Length: 362
Image (cartoon, rainbow, N blue to C red; front, side):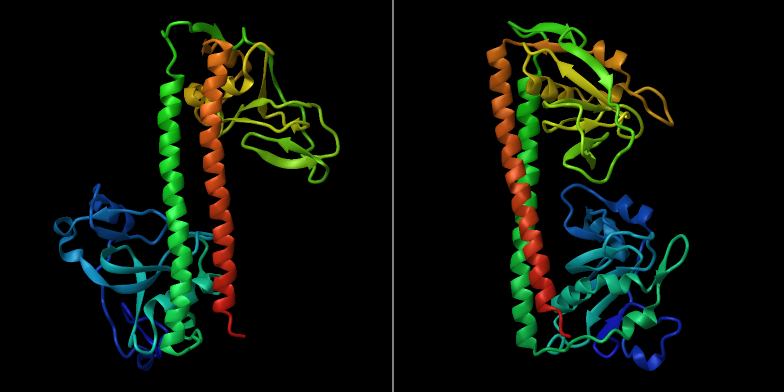
């Protein structure tokens, strides 16, 4: 690595001969970096973590930098997300260690990024410290980089760029579809005061609201055990044989609402809302999500949603046919989002497969 790249500063424990060129950048700590963030900025805020942001040249001032760079964070928390990033253009950087190719006719910067990204697990082992961890830059600089012909590097970059562009496109589609879904959900479920809509408490339209009873949380079996945010285990027995509306009862997720599969069990930290048959269960689910009932959680350190609180919530009830119409529309949005998410998962798996295949040189 040291024979092919220039970094942003001289490193302790690294011989001077291993750093023939330094390209310094002025950096900001995270709180100061994102103090520059503005909507519709055109200068990248190159953070050390997952947070994204943009600013303007005017706000960047003397901190404005430009280049094609590969970065790793100087300090990070244990287990933090993949530390390798790439950017080309104008930017303001956080406390990153920043590399660029000494000669792009020998080492393509984007190839360097993809290769380092594929070796993130190795780079991760170079970080040390009980709290904020810092990397051994000697170990980073002595990583052996496979030096392919520049044409082969560009070929690999082209293939991987195609995958990443497709992944980014799918993420944008999902974000846009979610916005559309939320817009139509809010329009469809804003029913209070509308003609033909009757306000009833959740207690009136349910057979009962009770806590789940599973405490074993078995890790084997045929049937899912649902906890406060989804499936947490499997069991060989089940107490319920129909779809249920579940509400997280206690903790940080108190008020989170979702629906189960048929034939399942439910943990005791979760409330079960069993609606009467004359009401559309999926409609009630959609309305509870729209209502954002976690806002009613009681307590500071350990938020709590009780069955009594849920029973007192008022639900606008239109005709059964209108309930079904609303459910059909929102189901289509959910199915569309799930389809895009499945495509994204598949594309990410393909990307990882080809990245590993193209960048493994054993």
